[in-house]
Length: 157
Image 1 (cartoon, rainbow, N blue to C red):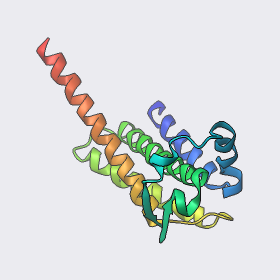
Image 2 (image 1 turned 120 degrees about the vertical axis):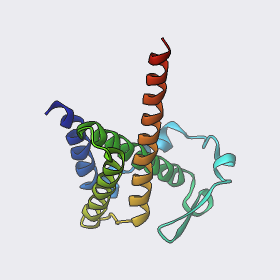
Image 3 (image 1 turned 60 degrees about the vertical axis):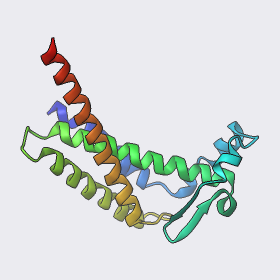
Image 4 (image 1 turned 180 degrees about the horizontal axis):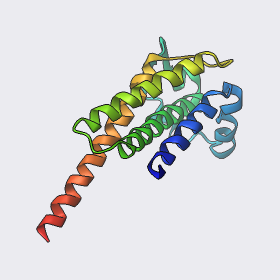
């Protein structure tokens, strides 16, 4: 039962986060307070993304909103990466545990986006589901590589 606790905590955190409006979650005032001189603006101005049918850049959104966008997407990627690992660890040693973990995380991501759709001031995005799933797969691959290296190192000793 203990192996399910990290997964349940992460899913609860995602549920609470998705229940908040954009205004409750924005980090723009904090960024403005701690980064008043817009550090790295020339470098960040080189980045342009097309996301949710819009161009996302420093020019189109402003420095702080663009930085917030990057933090939000990194949070998606890492949180669902952690969820993917938590699912993997919670599952019994099955032949297709890696694939099952990735698929289950994709399902969690999709339900999270559906939940956001019904939250005031929030939108649902298929691109976020893909980003979340990519985070899970990336974390699972890194975890597998680390496990292989540990195993290889322990057999050499």
